[in-house]
Amino acid sequence: MHVAQDKVVLIHYTLTNDAGEVLDSSEGGEPLAYLHGQGNIVAGLEKALDGRSAGEKLSVRVEPAEGYGVRDAALVKRVPRRSFGSGGNIKPGMQFQAQLERRQTRVVTVTAVKGDMVTIDGNHPLAGQSLNFAVEITDVRDATSEELEHGHVHGPGGHHHG
Image 1: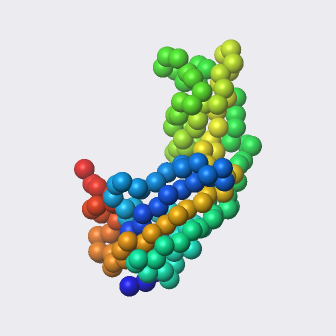
Image 2: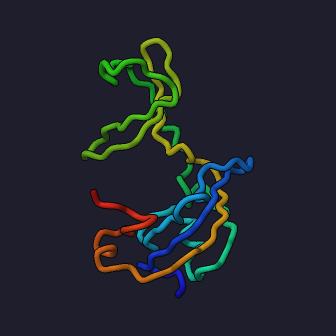
């Protein structure tokens, strides 16, 4: 069976940056299961897997525009420390959910704290970086009607409803 729209695909992968540092990997665990064509993984990797079969191994380089996006300087802001409430000591590296307009949220990362001002970055931590994937497709199967309805895979390697 080939990787195609609405198929469940299971992959083992290792993600590295251009310096060769491992950023994420499924090695030693369950393969990642995703529903193809539903935006469950970065677009560039999904495109590269389209039409492939179980057992295939490939290396894929994903540029920022088809990965986690290009860095957007407008998403870096300085805000007063009081914006975080009385939640204790704010330090670089901490992450918070920021409330945007229309009830949307975005994860922001604290990048600096200077006096009463905190610099936050709303870019994905991997924005602006090329992504290098080493991938092995371990299985391709038909999705269940429930998986199609929910837009993601259930069971091993996928989503679990609690």
